[in-house]
Length: 262
Ligand code: ADP
Ligand code: MG
Image 1 (spheres, rainbow, N blue to C red):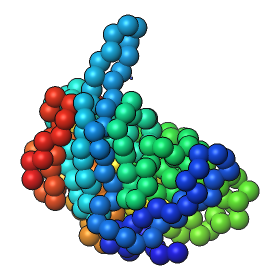
Image 2 (image 1 turned 135 degrees about the vertical axis):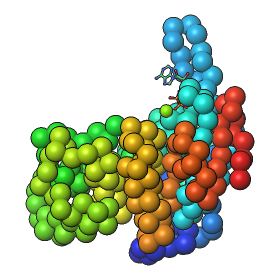
Image 3 (image 1 turned 90 degrees about the horizontal axis):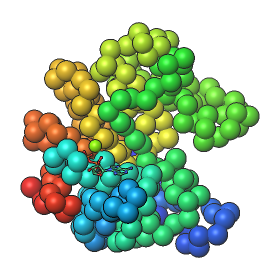
Image 4 (image 1 turned 30 degrees about the vertical axis):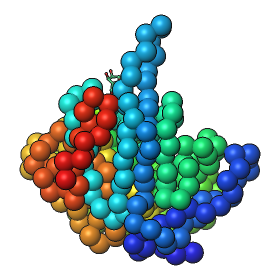
């Protein structure tokens, strides 16, 4: 199998039926667009009231690029990111992960896909307070494999986690707990955790929203380094125009639809 991190772009192949069990999602080289949506719609319902949030989103995320999503608070940025990351389902429209209709996959296959190929970073880090930096980074591998299988591969994953923590500049904080880290360090731990499964796609929801500008800049520099060194495709929601300015592409959500800024 090609290493998807090294590939210029990827394509999913595998069983298209929604019945379980499903085989692992495999990736191979194909065209430039990694992820796209067609006429994506999503409303939330509260009692009899329906709140339309996404009203026909057409989007094309290029492989290996850093795309920033901007828009007013409440414009649906997080909703869109959750749909792209298969954490939620659209009411209608299509989501393509290259040549496959992601939105038509079974829940199980979406889980597999997300665990294996998508890294997620959120504004509030969501680190486990009782675990060290190193242990927090290893958590997705423990969940993915189950304890016995994880234990068998433990030294390999430990090495990988330490490499990633060095990549995000935290090699000197391996055994600190979250309450002994700064906000920027916690977010860089969360980035390392998001990378432990070697994702092709990194989805970040206002990852600098809780940080001062210097720490925020460190986090963005780390993400850009990742994009350059490992060709990870990054989609980042941000309200920070300075960060949007260094993205390869900027799209804005306005009235439930996408406006391409550049
Ligand atoms: P953004 O991330 O751009 O601030 P969100 O995607 O979080 O916006 O939310 C878009 C709109 O959908 C907001 O008006 C929000 O109140 C509403 N919303 C989000 N999640 C839910 C939910 N689970 N139930 C009802 N309304 C929701
Ligand atoms: Mg949001």
